[in-house]
Image (tube, rainbow, N blue to C red; front, side):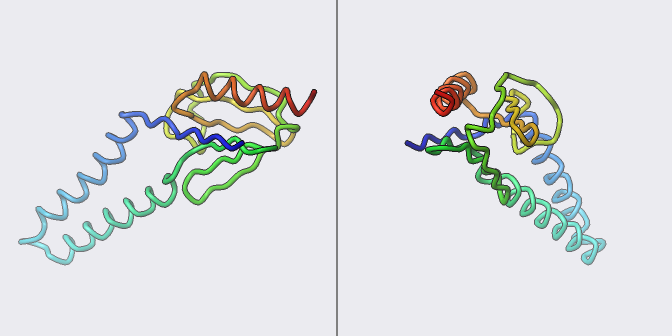
Length: 137
């Protein structure tokens, strides 16, 4: 049975990204009367940046499938077989990952390590560990 865990989203991350895009939009609006071409470029950059952020982060969720974990974050899709998972632990790593929060889960597996940030971290850890244990039983 599939169970999906949406990513936790840190408010500070939304403020940083949204604030940056907002500053570029404000800059563009302020330039409209004096430098219309620069204003259009600024607004274009803001729209392009917002679109890239959306494409790279939405949706961001972690799906526990029948025999693997499916990580979906924007265009990123990664499957990790339960049989390959060697460790699961809470983490606060700042390393780049398909995660929208620093309240993360570190998943060690045969081919490396992945960080995820499910909203319900403890429930996710328990659910994932049960599925890993069931494969090994």
